Image 1 (cartoon, rainbow, N blue to C red):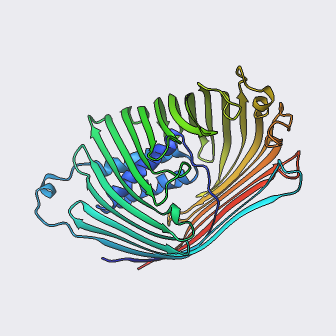
Image 2 (tube, rainbow, N blue to C red):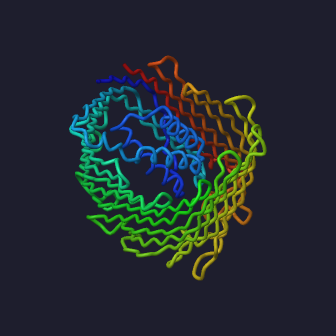
Length: 495
């Protein structure tokens, strides 16, 4: 059955820093696998509820809980079909979905130049109305096709992806092949062609242990490659060994490799590998604790003053998060991230450092489906002075931060989700002179606000909203302020 989806949305966007912790990465990979299964087999009401719960917790950045629900959802998808169903010769019904979207991308960023003697505000703005078409079709059995065309005043983009998966038995897998191209009308040298593929394989060794493997590679060629924008080959691999001896216990070993090779220059070549061990004790109705510790080694090459620099960085990290329910109305959660990083070749721009971040919140259920949370956040970063480095340039970067976090959530079984979170951090640079970096590391107060809403208006109409606002206020200078924001509104109509 064909479906026509009309998307009308206006976007005000500023790039945000993506999370790099293992739980967030695992969520992305698990969600990709879940969407692959969802494309070929309809989810039952109970399975759909698991998927919705995972997305709800991910929206609140509680990836530990989100992954628990995703893994339960995938377990239901991986169960072998009944023998009678497996032997049937009835051809699979082909499915097709067609989407058309229209809207505007509006990007704006403002920041003041702290090193300028005069007031100077730099603003970047992009306003791009667009039209996009998307087609997803099941071709034969587990083979499907996705195509996407997008047009705006700057770019003409086309994408085609062929997808094959096997989701029965104890070793589900999928593989896809992708080709995309973009014609940039304003900057033709940035036009590109890209080829890529993703692969996933899961081995269920027993009822309590399994191995998951993911791999993604990309090959991208620009019309006019340069040292700063080179053609490249990139490959990412992740291997995980899960052991779950009981319903409330989980252990995991992780290996991750991220390899990038630039074809026209040695600039931005790197190979990052990490290993980690993770242990979780979960009681979804009462408490949960997850601890991960690991080691990352990154070899990279970059250009500096027409010279090629080869360097290596080693990181030891510990991540931990957990929650505890005092009763059905009151709970407590925390997240801690700590790491130390060491470089083989030291520099003032990238000195060795220690980093600690801690967030703690109390959450109260006001009534069924509605909650309010408030908490405290702490951050501390200290850089290490090495031989040959200028002391002021290193010590200026040290900082401590204390702040408050408040938020509210509202959920309904009909799919309504409204979430608001705000944090205000007092970040101080106690050893900064304000001279070495032109006032870049001055004391500042940092405000972050995030709003998410998913509201079903009618059975066929949904409203999705997202907004984020960041304001860094420099306390020592009138020229060091930065502001960024993102807003998106999407009206989704399906028939």
